[in-house]
Amino acid sequence: MIPYASAAEAEAALGRAMSWWESAWFRYSASTPDYCLYCHNVVLLMVVYTLAPLPLALLELCCCAKLTSPYKLQPRVRLSAAEFLRCYRETARVLLLTVGALQLVSYPAVRAVGIRTGLPLPSVGEAAAQLLVYFLVEDYLNYWLHRLLHTGWCYDAIHRVHHQYAAPIGYAAPHAHWAEVLLLGLPAFAGPALVPCHITTFCLWFVLRHLEAVDTHSGFAFPFNPTALIPFYGGAEYHDYHHYVGRHSQSNFASVFTFCDYIYGTDKGYRYHKANLEAAANKQMKEMAPLYDDHDTTAAFNGWKQD
Image (cartoon, rainbow, N blue to C red; front, side, top):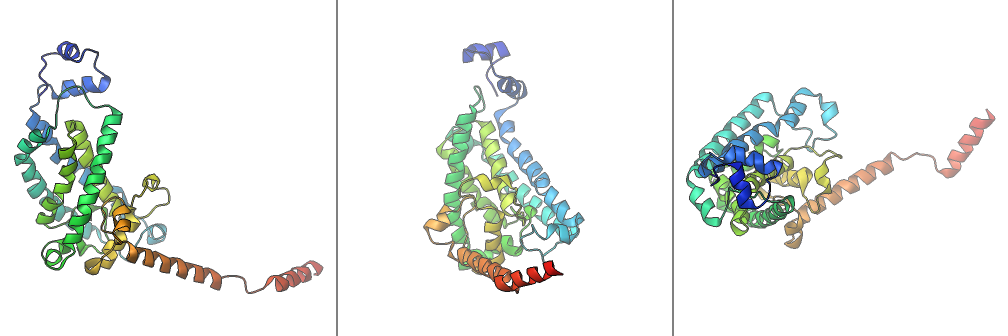
């Protein structure tokens, strides 16, 4: 709750006029307890989880296979509407019972690390720098936890739930055992704990992280995806291979970027797979090349002209 009775009092404390965003935040949060502002995360998470995967789900369900197969990473696997709905229902229940419950009791920790709710709001540069740190910290810690989850007992008892979708879909991004949802929440919170931010940046961080997870689990690779411009970004094709291999996968553990897999050598299987695909494509192109050599083609062309 912002400790100012009026906008004039807030501007006097800031020593300047509030920006449009700060005025809007003041009107929204002035009479809202900080605890309620923090709990917005649950609502945002469920809204993003419900809406973000929906366009590609409708594309797969409503469009003919000929239109979507060139972009679908595993075109032979197509789920029914009932299977999409089952995935959404199971995952939403786990998210509400784990993330929702955790949200109700974790507010003291958020306050303790210094997440603030008042004015001023962070600048665009400040928020962008903090978000970059959060992505880097989360990616590194998540990499090692993901590798741990692929060890014997951890996979059988916990991580196998997430790998039920060998051909992932957006709604399966957070589809996991409740223990995994809680465990992988630790890397996501580590960044804000190390570099405290405003509650608006905090909420934006979790929205962006979930959007990234939906993208990498989408099952589609479009040539016009703007995420291709992000340096070292893994993307859907990179993570789809990890799901395709499944239980015995020792490749592509990173959640966002690719440099951890490169540094620690856990992208070799993927690079070998890509090399084989390229070799097969080159072989197919050679087999489809014209049967005439240059001499025969010239002779045939000259004969056609004489006719």
